[in-house]
Amino acid sequence: MKLPDIKLKAKMPVVAMGDIAFLLLVFFLVTSALDQSRKLEIEIPSAKNTIKIPQEEIFNIFIDKEGKIYFKGVEKDIVEIQFLYLKHASIFKKPIIQLVADKDLPFEKVNEIIEALRKNLEIKVAFSCKEEKNE
Amino acid sequence: MKIKGKRTEVEIPTASQSDIAFLLIIFFIITASFAVKSGISLGYPKKDSLPKEVYVKEIGNIKILKDKVILGDKVVKEDSFNKELENFNYTKTIIFVERGVPYGRVVKFLSYLYNKNLEISLRVAE
Image (cartoon, rainbow over all chains, first blue to last red; front, side, top):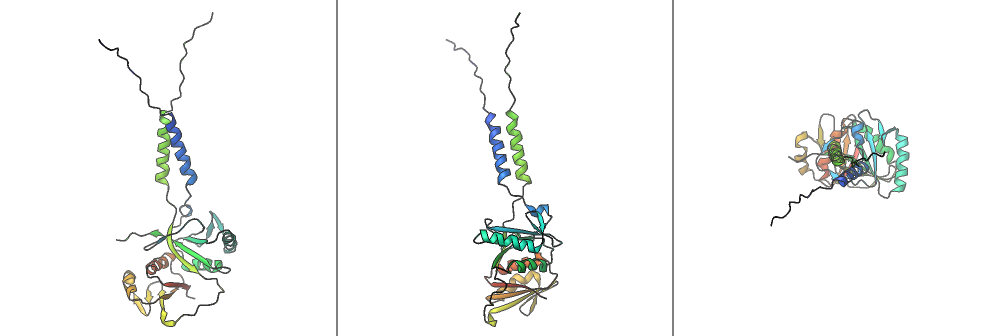
C-alpha cells in the first residue's frame, strides 16, 4: 500500500530574532561609555608596564594639546576642577584622578593641575596611557 | 448583492528585521573604541603635609631634560635607560622634569621606573 504523500510546510520562527537583536543593540548602546578623548582629539601616550585602573571611583580630567581642561566634555578652569574634585572626593572613599592628557602637552601644565588638586587633600593620580606591547 | 471576497492573509515581512539589527550591532562593535583603562598610578601627599625624613643615600635623582636623561650623575641614552636602571640601587627617587618636556616623555620614563618598586616623587624644575 502506498502511503499518501503529505508535504509538511516547515517554517523557522524568525519573528523573535529581530527582537533579540534589537535588545542586544539597545544593551550595547546603554552600557557603552563614550570615549571623550577621541572627540577632543587627545592623543594619549603609550608606555610599557602599565596597570589596569579601576574605573569605579574615577574622576576623569581631559587635557588637550593646548592645555585646555575638560570635564565631562565641557571646558573648565582649574578652580572649577578643584571644586568638582572636592565634591567627588566627598562621595567616594578611594577616588582616583585619571588624567587623560595629550602626549605633546608640556608636563608643567599637568603638574599645575596636580598641585591644585592636592592643595586640600592627599590624591591618587593615574596617568592614562596606551599599553605598549613588549617586543 | 453582497460580493463574496476572498480573505487574504496580510503579513508584514519581518524576516529581514533581524538581519538589519545584527548589521547595526556589528557596525557599533566595529566602530566603538574601548575606554581607556590602563595607566600609571602615583600617590601624592597633601600639599602642606609635613615632609618625610629619609636618608640621603636612599635617594637617587633622575633628571628628564628636553634632549637628555640624567640617571644619578650619568647621562643616559633613552633606549638604554631601562638597562641602566638595573644598576640604580635606590629605594626612593626624585624625578626632576624640565619645563617644556612633553607629558608623553615623562610617562614613558615613569613606566620604566614602575617595575622597580621605587618611591617616586615627581617635580617640575623651576
